[in-house]
Structures are given as structure tokens and as C-alpha cells.
Image 1 (spheres, rainbow, N blue to C red):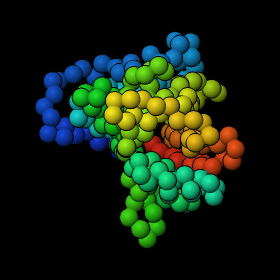
Image 2: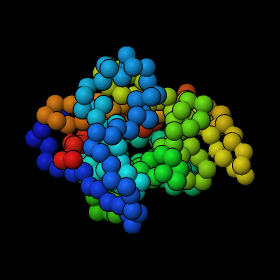
Image 3: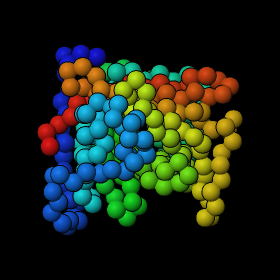
Length: 228
């Protein structure tokens, strides 16, 4: 995707009413970096390294604006998206092309992780808003949690100079118990690829493959870094 795409990006900072101590701009957040071997981390382009080590104070946010180039859903993908309405609608609800998008990442010291808010424009309708929390815990070191106790353990990789997140398994937390969801009953294997593109753009490409139904969801979105 070329730099001619008409969108802007910004990095917004807010304290959300929470005071925080001054911090040096030299401070880095090493939580994502520590999930990889140093040799793997070194293969990432420097903009990706900076993006995932930029430290935020408690309650502070970074916002990125861009667009969703394409969202594809199979029939089974649409069914999964409808079922997951019970858990806060964490997947796209309908196919789309060239719609506005925003991602807001907020540091949350109470959970020890980050709150991610994704806003997807929908022509003629209110935008879809997806909330999740990335927590640096669990057997793989990283979990993504959505509503209703549903979440997934994630593994992190570097492939072809891109940062890749893959679901290891899904889980449901009920009454203090953590239950793994059988793969056949899960949405499928999720993969998110964060890649540095041309002209200062970066992309997030999300795919979900079900063991029986193949690719059920695919979404490609493009953003730009804003000033710090």
C-alpha cells in the first residue's frame, strides 16, 4: 500500500485523571522484547522495535489512525463473529473495504498490561469498537483477554522481519477456574502480523484458520506513526 492513501496518524497522550511521576524519554518498556531471544529481536526493523518498547505512564495512551484496506469473512467466520457477541464482539462483524480505523493503546498498571481499543468505521452505521487487554502472564508470557472471561495465550515470533503473534490456545475463566477451549470449538488459530511497509506505513494483518473450515477471517489494516 503506497503513501498516497489519504489518512493521518497521531500519538495522543492522556493521563485519564491519574497523576504520574515524570519519566525520562530514555526509559523503554522491555516487556515485548523480553518475549523474544535477543537475536530474534535484532532482526526487527528499528521502527517496530521503537513502537513496542515505547514506555507509557499509568493511564497514558498512544493512538494510531489509519484505515482497514479489507475485511473478509467466510460464512463460518460470520457465525463465529455473531457467537462472540456474547464476549464483547472481539472480531469484525462484516466484510468491508477502505474504512477508517483507529487503535488506542493505554497502559494499565492495575492489570500489569495494556488496554487495546480498536475502532472500525462502518459506512452508514456506528463504528464497531473492540476492547481487549494484553497481559504479560500465563505459560507463554502473553495473554489477550476479552469479555466474559474469554482469552487466548499468545506466542511471539519474528518472521521475514515482521513481528508475529499467534494463538497457542483459547481459555475461559469461570469462578476462578481456567478452562482450555477445545480447538474444534474455538474460533480457530489466530495470527497477527505486524510489518513495516513503505513510506513510513506499518500494517496489521489478522487471519484466523479453523481446523475444519480453513481461513474464516482475514483483515488487513494500515497505519502511520505520529509525533512523539
